[in-house]
Length: 248
Ligand SMILES: Nc1ncnc2c1ncn2[C@@H]1O[C@H](COP(=O)(O)OP(=O)(O)O)[C@@H](O)[C@H]1O
Ligand SMILES: [Mg+2]
Image 1 (cartoon, rainbow, N blue to C red):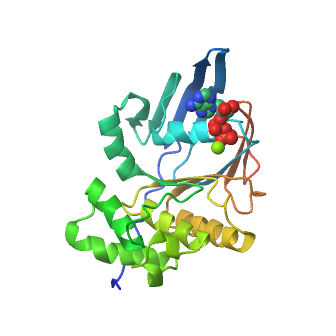
Image 2 (image 1 turned 30 degrees about the vertical axis):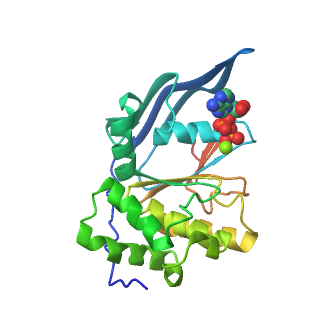
Image 3 (image 1 turned 45 degrees about the horizontal axis):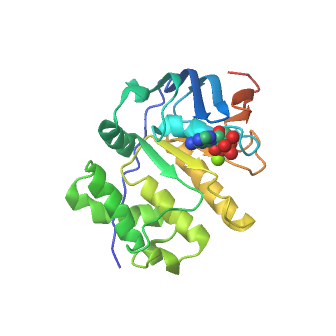
């Protein structure tokens, strides 16, 4: 069992209201039957430290929007600026480094490496990005697993854990390099309702430490849990509601 002492949870500065900035972002896909517009002229600003839900029917463009934000995919047109980095201009090799430091990603099906233990999955993420000093990594992995409540499973393979536990491990991995932003694409889509609550509570706790958390979800959402709820339909934002009732 790996040990841990304590973890410095970084208090990220709540500065820029234009922390994440989409300008006229469109993404289309060409096919034999013509052009399909998955995102249409999205203008979007997200403030640092906010808890944002993105909702909408299947096919409305939610994953495509997140992919623009993480640089997993690029806009066909328009610009994505995050904390003064023009993400849409980065090539694949600079993107990998940028993403590692800036965005933690949580997927619906966890995507842990099955042949590595839970702790090793987290250590690998740290080794890959190389911003956490080597001598701190084991401690930090333990502290992150404690933070998400599964330290006791550190030395098990993913398959030995329940879905909810694997998702907690995936969240710990997403936090490995202390990124300011966490995005999650239907992170509870594969989980029962009790487990879903645990995962969603974890995200709320992370927002309290200053993280910007953006969650695509099919769960019922309200401005009790989220600072902001953005609704997509057919690739466009059709509603954008903030907790104080304003439309940003
Ligand atoms: N790589 C792709 N090639 C062609 N069409 C795509 C591709 N990715 C997404 N789409 C289409 O764009 C639309 C939006 O997809 P997506 O963002 O995955 O929706 P959501 O996550 O809201 O379910 C869908 O109609 C989907 O089929
Ligand atoms: Mg999707």
